[in-house]
Image (cartoon, rainbow, N blue to C red; front, side, top):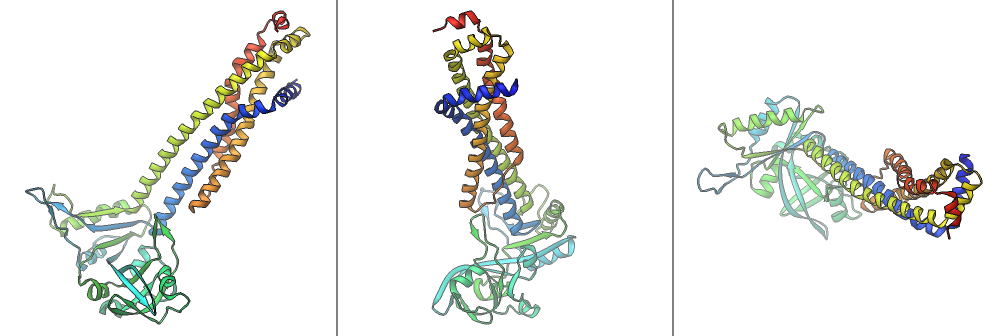
Length: 401
């Protein structure tokens, strides 16, 4: 009986193919929107996680910050960190790798090519905390770090911009007014949050202070927790140690800022998940609109086929058979819309993430849920028209014009 009912439903849909396609369009848009929104949200979450991991696992940035003066409400000058602060962190906090950072912007030139880029002065620990790899050449030697030697390691973008097809290793690069020997080239890291991580030149920390900025203080301390899941403990220890070293009294605000990348990643992922759920809920409204469209067309169909229904009932069809026939018609329309919507949602997601350079993520749970919801929409919104058809009086129905 079920197969016969299914065949009858398909026949009815085929007789009004154009109207049936337009009826299913609401469900197509609803399912497609939900699939696309959820998949794009998950792709964005993965992109954020990937970007954070690329910056360095368990990384914390420590920077001096402005504070309010006790009177007048004016801002006091930020107190920079010193090499002694870095040594104290290495000595007093367990399970960390620490690198000082000094930065400057300078014009670099080789031959007749030049570019402006950022120069970072640091130590070899920076490679570990920022998850950097050497693609060619070597890292800094101890004597180069101690003496502030004019040597540098280039990011791939710098090599492309100022060397073209020339070999950078062993060459002499002009950084501002300083001649610098190139001893290494970094492996590519790509862009992160819109910033090209490969457009950088690394130099010994003392070399940047002596040759470029004229300062010996530290702008940023990079701290990496060696063990996963310990960044919160390291952050707490850092704050306690630095408050002590900077003689901050109880109740006095920190004059430095500690940013935990794991915490930032967690916040961004949570925000992304919330936005995905919100957009998915908004998109799901169109599923309701699609269901109402199906109910409307099914009611019209019942009215148009009143005599046909009366004839079926008159020759012995049972009420539940008529009910099932119209329910199946509504479900077929809704499930068809769901399947097309899933295909369009997945295809649209692929097209967008490809253009944005994001990972392609398909949530199979959401695909299965969308398929199930489309079937439920057919049942819910098709039940009223089916019930109306099943309750028709055969005699009245046969007299219907």
